[in-house]
Image (cartoon, rainbow, N blue to C red; front, side):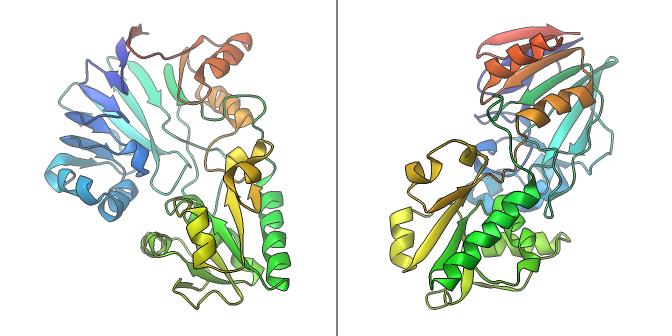
Length: 330
């Protein structure tokens, strides 16, 4: 039996292990290096790729993630911890280095998904899905409304957007996170024949991607004057008003799964929005459960309650986790 508690993160109390907690803890698993998943912990479990990105991205967090405090587990390596459990990491398909964690204690197997996607991309390890008795899974896009078009169609639409605006003398600017969407866009557009200029944050991440074995088309770091005839890739954190001042003639496209929602481009103040996501859509959330074949499912984040109800209607023993819950699992 594995006990589980949910309060500012998921805690497996018999193991003393937190899963992506939102507050600093003694012992935690960090599923990937996006800033909303990184806090100051005393000890961490991470994949090798996530360790490298934490070193690049963490800034003040890096001091807390030295080798003595970090358990770096290669994918597929079943590892024993003195707290009385085995842990194995599996690729999650979300961003490069992202991981699911399978914990095993007294014959019970619990899988925590972290953020994941089933669709393969050119700049990330493809997901591997193990079986488990209990599944704790993200539900960011856990409503039937969130069904993403085929990736090839979205990429073709992005290429068309870039070509049209280049022909008009404008500067296409694609907004995607430095870890994940931005590098995936660059790799996806490799055969389109564009010249690229990258924001400095994205440029440094792409350098690390290359060190980790991902291939990209030729590109330069963006500086004033490098815009002419190029497609620019910037992180979405760059303010739209500042971006339009920095890049005269910019035609800005936001790349996100939320582009499925009507009016996304108007709401964000951009010229276009395209639904390319590094998360699972609703269809893939359901397929993920089918692959894991758990006895019980717990949903967290996003549309957790809606997804749990839909899973129940499909015959799964599912419920959404709520803050303050303490559960005993099979």
